Length: 225
Ligand code: NI
Ligand code: MN
Image (tube, rainbow, N blue to C red):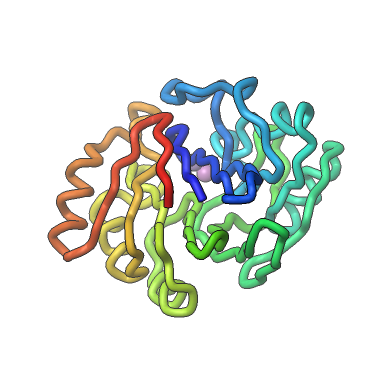
C-alpha cells in the first residue's frame, strides 16, 4: 500500500488493489496542503471526529466520488443525514472491509461539527491492509492505554499529533511512541496554524533517543509501505 500525506491530519492510502482511502481530508481551508479537494477522489473516507479541520472537505469530495464513510456511530449518522453512504462502527469494534480491516480506538478530545452537531466520541483508527497496520490516533492527549493498543494490535506505522495546544505536544507524543511501540512514528497535526507551531525534527530526534524510528513526511509526499 501507499501512504500520502497532505499535511495536518490528512492522509491518503492507496491499497495494492487500487482502493483509495482518505483520512480526515482537510484540504481547501488548510494553508499547508499542496493538494485541494478537486484533486482527489475516494472509495472510502474515514473520519476520526467532527471538528472542521478533520471533516474538512469530506462532503465536497463525496459529492463527486460517492465514497463509503467509515466512522463511529454518531458521526456516521451525521454523514448519512447529509446524504452520504456510511458504515457505522464504534470504539473497540473492528470490521473487515474488502480493502482491509478497520478498528476504532479511544481518543481524548471533542467532536462538535462546524454546524454545531455533537457527533459522539472522538476516535483513533487502526487500519490493516496489504499486511501492514497503521494507527492514526486522531486528535488526542496522551493516554496509557496506547500501551494496550500496541500490544493487542502490533502497529507498523503510527500517525500521531505533535502540535500541542489541542493535542499532545512533543514530549507527550514521544511517550505515546514509547507506549505504542510502532515500527515507524509519523508526526501530524503541527505547523498548520501559528498556535500549533513546533519543530518536527525535534520530535524525530527525541524519538531516536528512545531507540525508535520517526519519519517526517513532507506535504504532498507519498511513500510505499
Ligand atoms: Ni479536533
Ligand atoms: Mn484537529
